[in-house]
Length: 540
Ligand code: GLN
Image (tube, rainbow, N blue to C red; front, top):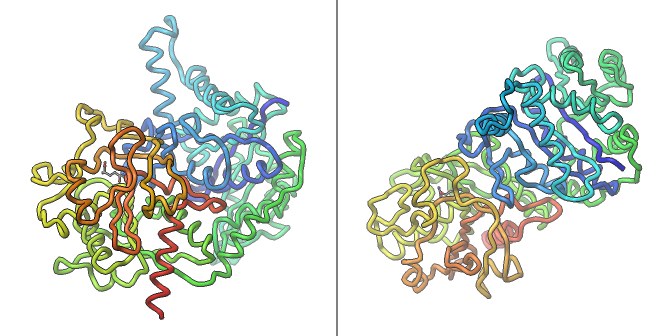
């Protein structure tokens, strides 16, 4: 059976959750026994989102092979078992870069280099490369970022048109649109969808399924109208209303409307029954939790709802695994202090998490959040910069090294407890040059980390330039800051934890990238468990 291709484009506006829908569809296909690979095209000119401010782009999702990618890959990871690597995300920047490098080498033998065919060929080669990254892929799900009508998305759509022409019978196009409810008129409007599909058809892409994001399920009459104007069968107009409780309801809703089966029929794939009972259980737990546990997130990008996407999701997975609901309170790290103390309004969470970050703004707030948790024996989870803040708090307030810091923020400190990784010393370019991707780490027996993982060697993904300075390890360990995980066959510190504390753990890597609702991350599970325990003690 040849590999099949499912193309997902978006219409009307952005932020409709196209990545989530793509991931949910891929899950349905996997549940039918198919092997799926996923690919996200991003039409912007950055080579990757790694150099973008999180306010612009949200989280940067890192793969095992060290690619800095779009956050939709996080959805792909959480919903599916699709292989995720450098081959799973391509931007216009990468595509043009590859073509221009070839042109400079003289590979085009004097030809004029053009969008068609050179850029479109490069785009098509990425689709094929994604299909070939592992053996026996049945379906490649290709999501095109942006909205139909965007100038920068045109080469991708043209490449998809060509690809469909070259692979007749093996391609299917799904268009995700928005069907707004207009309050003043008291009805939903299908016109934006009609226009969006028209625009797509004028490019030569004819969607066979229209996926309608909407506030409430659509009436049959509304579906019939979309069917007529958009040239698809009435049953191929699928609604995807806003979910009330959790995004993990999305695949259930799509399955109810026969989405997986329809894709198989249209692609000539063998159909099978879809068993989503595991996902139903997750949704049921979210709807009927045993209790709520409240976590405070102290970071500097809290105003962008996607900046800590994977962290939020990993917390939710962990809470679900304990039968709880997570309540997340976000605090701007440069606004959490008052008279050099954590503000009263920031207190009162069951635990605190300080996520990754860069630069000086809000740095002191993060250190003092760690101090507050250490002093008051409140669970604390530090991720990357959050781990570094935890080490600096310990150095300043337990060791008494008042000027201790990271050289990222204070290059002149006399106590550089966090310093630049030696491999980073010569690096000048900022793009794609951090310590990136998966490394193996050996855990110390009996530590909190070891208890959580229940294994001695782990593999986690990284994205940083600075590290815990081993020069200080001996002295700090004597005072209770245990180094509980180090890079395999090396000395780079990966995990630190405060002993004589219920749960205060900092990790140099990003565990949030490897949590699924069906397989919550062990450290998040342990952290949430510690918060539940602390909460229980308070109420006793
Ligand atoms: N800025 C810190 C470093 O580069 C932490 C990075 C992060 O939190 N991802 O080491």
